[in-house]
Length: 252
Image (cartoon, rainbow, N blue to C red; front, side, top):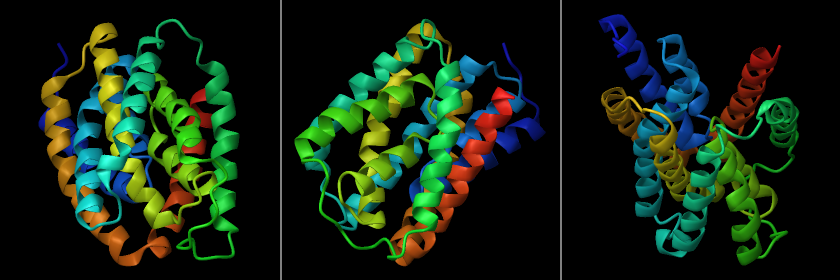
């Protein structure tokens, strides 16, 4: 059984807080928590499994905060959330049988493209545009695709959900961010359900980090609603570039 000293535990708790804060604003909190868990000595698959526990708290808190503010009606997302759960469950179960090297090679280029897309946008990102996909088609394609990735690998899934809502769903950045959170919660839950069968999550550590996720997510959601795209867009650019760098570092 893994044992954590006081210093290691504090690092994980601080990582949970900042991950909740970043994830509520721009997604990508797993970029912080998964490496932190691995640095603390948790094996990779077990780190991914434990990350799903604490991620539930942050995404759930953010979803509730955005819904309470009136930015999203969670009832309309029940169907897509169910699809996200199932797709993420399938992704988690596929961890032990599917090669993931090709995914790790493609994702950095995709993330750099995402960063450039938002960095070079001329509009402030608050304006809704015409959707490229009808809601039903969006739910049947983009949602399960991102959710499967969330179960298979995970870090950055919140950012991918948000990008899909902006680029394909036609939403402004703040509304898109609000709509990602229930889906992210559902795919975290599905991923955890799958990992319980193929790994051994560290429940005590995951729950402790989850408490810090709640605190970070509440602060992040409040700041995002107060400042909108002016805060979300630069954080999304930085998060995407940081995640791309991390994935390239792992590959090389």
